[in-house]
Length: 333
Image 1 (spheres, helix red, strand yellow):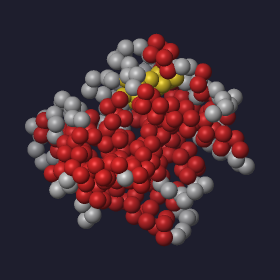
Image 2 (cartoon, helix red, strand yellow):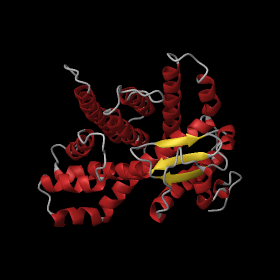
Image 3 (spheres, helix red, strand yellow):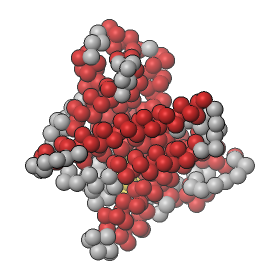
């Protein structure tokens, strides 16, 4: 793809290994497939969005020329950070994506798409099994998520042959890929929104605030980045069928937060609000996005958003119970 004024590819991925410190990238991953996927999402898809924005008859926030300028020349790296299921923005440099997070997102996509075949009466059961396995695994969290999906399917009565057929079916594979890439696209844009919204200087300023104020101020930055990423994706999807793909991408990302929070003292960290807070905001934004639209497809989207929100609430409650049991708290939700 011809490089636009933005010139996304000015920093090679070989050079990226030298740019990010061991603090944020413990072990650099050079897997060609994973790198190609993130190149397509972090660089190529963003370039496509910018090109579409510039051709649009009307320009609106958050994807403005100022936003684009602040995202110029960012690098990315895929890393294996022990115990991490996260991505990290390094202001002025770029973004580190944890390989385990990518694997878990692919596993979630498979669980959500394959789930209808495994249990038509409860299509979210397979996703619930995957999340429960992580939440119940203890601090180790060394589960192979793709293997876990297969094992759960076998337990549910799927044969090796049936699993292989699903895995290799072109239509099913495409649906998995769309969902997986949607989650990565949301994650990528969330991190780019941190740059585009000038969160670097704001984080520095928050460090000078009193200890009791810092968490809520940091949480607001995360919610602002969620809202920003969702708005960019929704604007892109509005050309098509108003699909709320941004909501599902965010929900899959937040699921990883649910897993990590199961081993924390609180559902919130110093930098991230609780999964429930993020999901509630995302659902409100997704439903508001569909307001004013009509037709049977839009009605299905609304029902799906609410249904998946209810499912995620149950996953979050499971993490709460796990966290409470580790701390010896009774009466957990």
